[in-house]
Image (cartoon, rainbow, N blue to C red):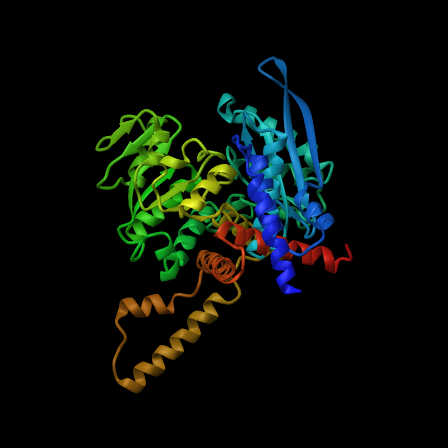
Length: 489
């Protein structure tokens, strides 16, 4: 029986390869193709596969806001991919080119992402077709609150049903506006703060949330480099120390990932790609200095001590050890994939590699750490924030000082028995109880380690699993299918 199933799966996978795109697939098509490549390896019914693949619903809202003496109409979306767990979870992005297909593809990735790293949420995503730089802060607040109003009144923002977070073009400020709008409309909801995550600390946020996705990328790479067999598959050796990195996108995710890898792991960031070009220095760039220059001037141009390249995307093709695409979807395509030299790519952003490019790189032997795992740090720490809001207490508040007291007693006993004192620096570090930030980082590190170990087990031990992406998809689809099965579907 097992042999027959394996033969069936091989035939299905061959059929999928025969149907890989001859032209560049869209982001939505890429997600579907990657899903199908994994699903054909699973012995679940076609009907259930289709149920897991498609989005349950997408709400489109068009609303008007009077600004600058005239009425402006805006279009927004909120897509719910899967409600196998509730609430559903996913960010809200503000970008001029937001559209329904993009939002639905991102919602599907959120379902798979949450299932892979065992965060008990279904997948959702939202977007508002707007360039936030076109409006001043007061205007943007009015637009955001009206968009939130339209979603809240339909329970598309709700602590128990649908919980947004920041995404491209949004941050703590926008999340605080949305949370306040929800509280104004639900004055008696004691859990109102849990309606959205990524809030400022003074509005119920959690320490470490801003850096979470970038920190997750760092932890993912650290775990990869703990496995010599995996390092060898990428044609690399040694540790992260000294590895040459090119990062595309110095926004929240790319900035934190690159800075942590540079400052804490000894990596050399030789290339940074932004919208207006790229910077290159074989000796290594100071990520913090580049970010500071960008904040002061609004551009990477004019940064001293590095070569400016007008066509920044060319740096994707620069020889390096690790390539980190951390911004837009579809930046590595069938057209430029043959010129990508990095032996290891970690998808810090959502969908940076199209399905066609993925096939080429996979067949060439490039190791790709996929977005549904590498990008999961944000939703993991959002989960911690949601739990904090529901429990109404800061992590560590009850146990931190008790932990310090127990450590103090232990050290005193050892010093009395040995007649020697501990070095003060080691003593201070050991005695310090875990803060909320310590606990968040510990939980995130554990999540990223466990998720990678589960993926690599499929990658190395399961027939037909050629790469980490399919391993991740398989784990996620199996878990969602099990949830539906236990619910009687």
